[in-house]
Image 1 (cartoon, rainbow, N blue to C red):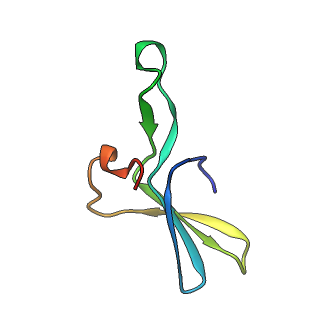
Image 2 (cartoon, rainbow, N blue to C red; image 1 turned 120 degrees about the vertical axis):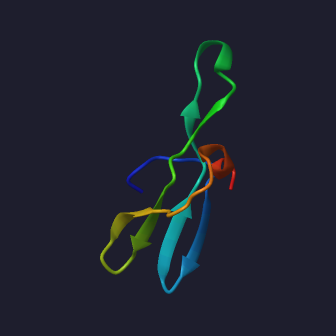
Length: 69
């Protein structure tokens, strides 16, 4: 993937792997137990081309909805 993420959702459709949501890190200081949520940019992996590409999710919900999808 082009952006590291954990706890994301994924699916395989038409031989492509789609990854979306999840978290990209943790906060600092008093918020160190608060996850930093991944962006609304989903990613698609094409195994034939061995390449990831970004997909903008039109009308995506607020970022908090994307954590632990």
